[in-house]
Image 1 (cartoon, protein in one colour):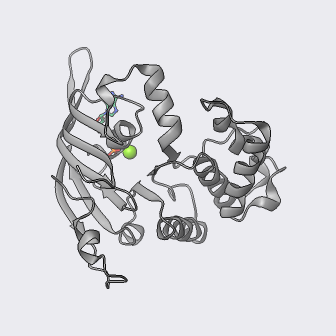
Image 2 (tube, helix red, strand yellow):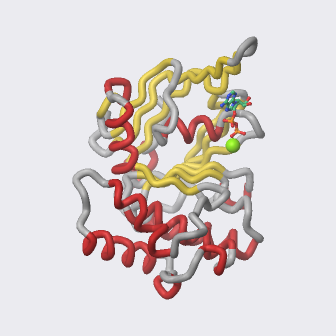
Length: 250
Ligand SMILES: Nc1ncnc2c1ncn2[C@@H]1O[C@H](COP(=O)(O)OP(=O)(O)O)[C@@H](O)[C@H]1O
Ligand SMILES: [Mg+2]
């Protein structure tokens, strides 16, 4: 494992077992995600994209295989330790923004920070929220309620909420699914910008226009990785070799 490896999946499988049915949602997934990567997962409905994101986000556990995050074997953690790791390292962005209508924008962004261990002080929380809202250019809306904002603005607030905890990786599921193309473009521009500034992103999208923006394309079919490619971008620095070998499939 290289020093900048954030996440390492080794032969991951996920089987959903119902009364008389078994669904093999993921089979034999091996993948490394390194700091600074920008990965797009695509594939037809039901191929396992959301399952993969929920495993990456420690919302569910694999049936088989190993999942390391920052070299910690997640199998060795109990539920509380997993929640702690999730709170510390993972930012989620969903198609439905999942904001709480009764809370102000400020309080929505602050909420996950109030669960931090060790606890953050009110002034630390205020600073982190302000920085995150400024990052998405929504600082002037901090006292609004979500339903007073457009869909695009609500998604920006959801992105601020994910960023406020300074996560190691953003996990993004169909971020533009509920947006018109103008707002969708703006949200994607923001994600591109965040990646350029160093944020690691793993995103699921159906939309091929947006998928092409990611540096790494991963295609799933019936729970398996069927193709994996990295964009051949013009070398912007002398670490081209590093860029090409990052996020490799093992
Ligand atoms: N909680 C669940 N229980 C049973 N089967 C599930 C569950 N979640 C997903 N599945 C099944 O697993 C497969 C992959 O689902 P999913 O990861 O949601 O696909 P995608 O996000 O690519 O559309 C599908 O066949 C789906 O029906
Ligand atoms: Mg899905």
